[in-house]
Image 1: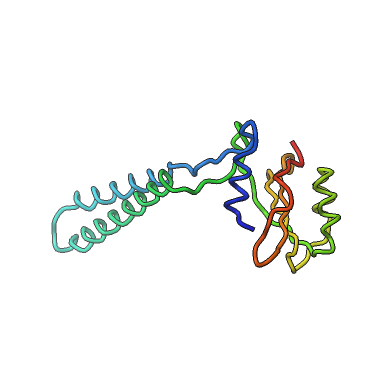
Image 2: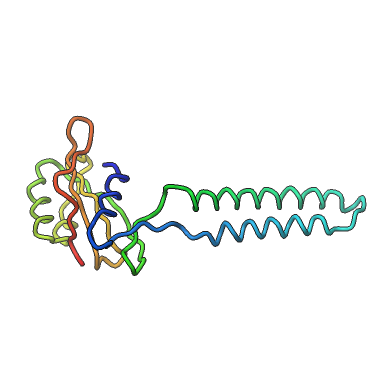
Length: 167
């Protein structure tokens, strides 16, 4: 199952039920500020033989922390990654996969068609993933979306469109 294609199908649902959110930029900005503070502290040390090692160590540490923070900031601002969240609420959604044997396909499809998430979760999973259900839900289970896939010819093919099980 291609998680990227599943997420794109989630973002295409009507009324912006699921939106892509980026991670916060607070931590990278804090890392840049902390690195700058360490560099300034290294420059403010009095120049003496005993402080020379501290001076170099602080400058190197501060520069590394600031560069790591800057790279993290660039990744969060311009990176393509994001995680699915529930509409305006902004609650993060967890994506998981359920694997079933081919002989369970009828029960899996019936549970999805009926919108019965409890029945779907109650089905015994198989180690051989002939039928896989991509499930995206809130941590408390009050909202769930799924899409079934079938493993055919070395790839997962969708059996149905994305279906909202609980609102």
